[in-house]
Length: 208
Image: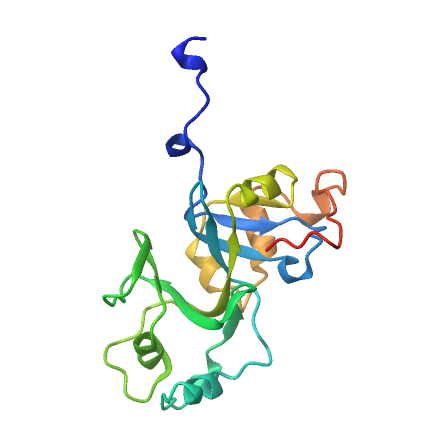
């Protein structure tokens, strides 16, 4: 076998860090139905992302801030809180533009970061911010996680498709149909996707 026939190594695999993951129309796991996930990290050992289009209608931000001993500013409850995924739902994080950075901020892309600190919540919705909030952000609770090879297997089963991210889709998920807009980036609509293309999952196969 020549060198050109060698299988790809883990370092040359097409990982999806920085991509948007889009649930197929017949997603079997209701937690991910019509979901759009920003993939924060993906390698041979794991994948991690946050759902960016599932607003938690029954969660009031001021109540969350009070639990953390943060004095909410006037109008804080206008900031939506999103279901980021079923993993570690006791923890929150802020996905935001990089005009805002703290020492704890993880840079995900040239213009996108993730911060999971109390200080970020104070700057976004507290009465006494230490610095200006990011230009655009979403506040999420929980995240989505996959083990080694799990996400790749689900993609092979047509549970997901993926596309390049756009700021409009990421940060306007509360005001628009982010799922349809993400599919439109691929040039398709949900009506164009046949049941044969997206395999239905059994009830005993949760995606996380």
